[in-house]
Length: 215
Image (cartoon, rainbow, N blue to C red; front, top):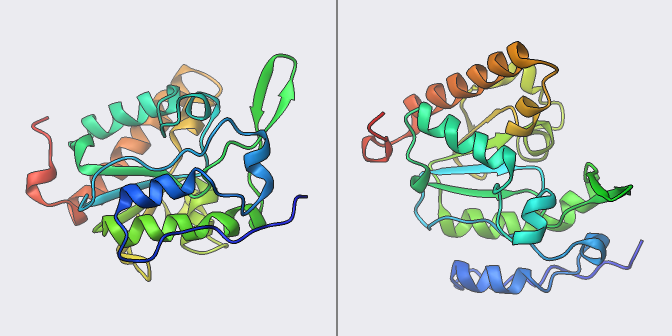
C-alpha cells in the first residue's frame, strides 16, 4: 500500500468549491492510483438533506459526479415518490474514489476498508461543515457503520432518526444499488417500496415544508 499523506483539506473558512478543488489532489490513501478522478459531493450549501453512500461506482468514476448511474436514477425516482425535492439535497459518499478490481472488461466494485474510509473522513467532515444539513441519511451499511456506529444494522434500524455529533439528526436506509441487486421483480419492488417509505418517514421528521415536492 502506498504511503499515506494527510488530506489537503482547506481551512474552515474556505468555501465548498475550494474544498472540492482541493480534493482532486488527495493522496491520503492509495485508491486514487486506480481511479479516474476524485468524485466529490454535489448540491448546495444549506441543503436540509445530505444523502451519503459508500463510494462512487463505475459511471460516477468516469463522469466525476455522484449517483449518476442506475442506482442514482433509482434514488431520484424514490425521492420524487417520497415527496422530497431532489434539488434540496446534497449527495456524496464516505469515500471519494472508486475501488474496483478487473473482471474481464468490467470493473467490479470492491468495498472500501476501514483505513480508506478513515483517510477520506476529513473531506466528508468538510462537506458537513459547509452544507450544515438538518439531517444526514446514510445509504447502505458501509456509510451507516462509518457515520453512526460500527454495530449499526440497516435491516433492524433503518428509517430511525437519531441525534448525531455530525449535525442535528442522522438516519439510514438501504443503498439504492441493493434494490437493483434484488433477485427478482417482486423482491426489487418490495425493496424499492421500503426505500420510499424510509425516505417518507425521515422527511416527515426533518424536512421543512418548502423542501417538499408537489407530488
